[in-house]
Length: 260
Length: 301
Image 1 (cartoon, each protein chain N blue to C red):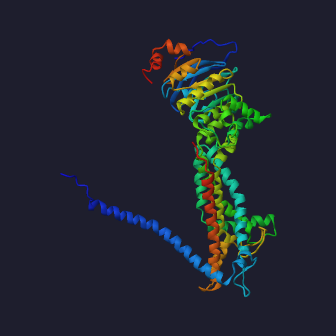
Image 2: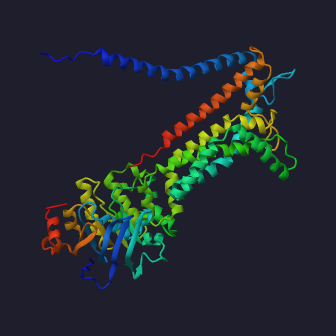
Image 3: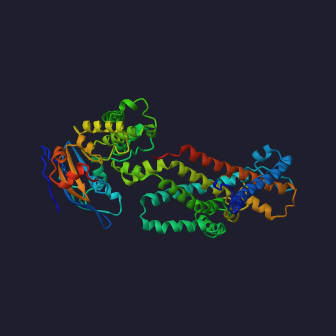
């Protein structure tokens, strides 16, 4: 079964066009024939119960599943008209343009400055690195808290600050799309709120795809929501519609908290 | 009726016996160590009753068995340091690169072949390495540098270097593997290549363990005996030329122990003075490696 949900796409066209995507881990099918469009400059939330394949799907969008030996991907993910899974595509180039923020903050054991400068440095950035680091930290709403101690270890920061540092690190590479895998699940409510506010700011400039366990969070921050269940895309549409007027019974059952 | 909460003899006696046996086992190795150090100390102190510390540490001639005796340890120390340094030049880069390959690049099948091979390398008796140096490495050196002595430091250094590669490789690999996958993924997510992930994230994050493996390997090279006795010659010779014969501290101890050295003589006591020097060097290296590990260890989250 493969259903494509049409959503209103702006004049810029979709940021990502997923066509009939399946992912296998050995014999297990983790994602089953998913097709969807991710619009430019907006937030798409992937929701669903544990093990429904939402993280696996997210990791397909920047070829992160390549790092898992047993994973095999079928189908296509088009980015600017190019299939990311075409044999000629270098996953390193993909990840420079489609960044990722992970579930647990994973700063490098380096200084705050070097964490943010890491991406630009490996990508051969020529220009004012100090200015880029400052700009990225400001975008991630962390600058005011760290501007006087950029040389300190990133591990000296709190969990919420570390996660914003990881967001700054991702933004410093100037990606077009930012993928976020439950970025607030390891954080306390106040740190979570700051991340949500940050996402709200970032969507003006970036396309964001976020996996979340937290349905209130999806409702608060996303423009479109995709509900996955057992590897299948059950329903995809504007967030309002998914939460107030779902077409599928399983979607309604999940968003009203009857399972999951 | 009150519950019976008293000690039960049938369970308590074995408990105490076991505790005592375990304590004795733990005490035995400690006591042996203390005993060895005590003997070393006693003879070393006796040695320094006859030879000044200044002569021992600064003298450039080591001739304890000649008519006119000289007790300068520098030629032996220089021999040991030279062999260890040349061995390190070979083993540290090769060992570290092997570790990076095993941890970051090799698939399970290649690992399955390479790791047992490294263990075999570690299991070859050092006397075999010695003959390998003498019968294979030295002739090779002599075709390249015809002036090479039959017994020379370079040939011993090469085999000691090969000998300590497994130490560097396996300890460094453990350190690299301990770096959380999340750090690698973070770097890949920023568009890093495998080489960039390995050299800019994984190796720096594992640096304390890598340096500790280096120090332990060098310490092993300094303590290595059999290969240098066979291949390096037994000539206390203060030189920087690796193609000449030299003698290391360990090789001198072998030579002096095999000869007729009556107990209580000054030659007998040199054994302990040199042994003490060796002991202090390796002890210092081990403490240094512990300190590096503790001081620079990254607490991953």
